[in-house]
Image 1 (cartoon, one colour):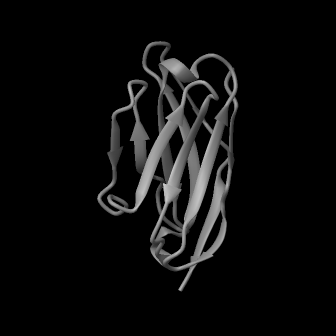
Image 2 (cartoon, one colour):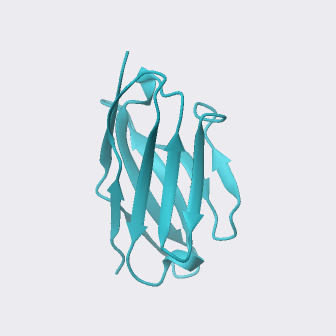
Image 3 (cartoon, one colour):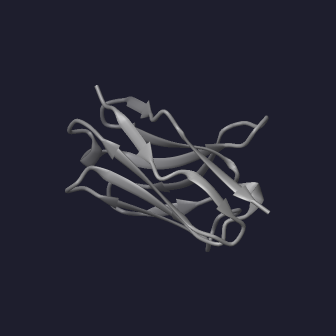
Length: 117
């Protein structure tokens, strides 16, 4: 069983920055792909950024150039650095672990990010 605990959300003005962090328990982290998703109010959950176990990254077009995903396999953590935040970035952000090898995936409880205009 894996537990994912997010932290770092909050309220920030447009143009500001926030750093989200997700800590994973257990031993799957190093062999899993990690991702950050978000769910804006009244909308579906969407992928924001992902990083493979090998360190390759992908980003949604809406955050490319503003957000950076990174991972620390020694600490079992994945982070999302969010710069130049916009009101449309307001959402609940979720950490996701996906192990294709073991055919399991897990979600964190989510952390609220609110960007005021």
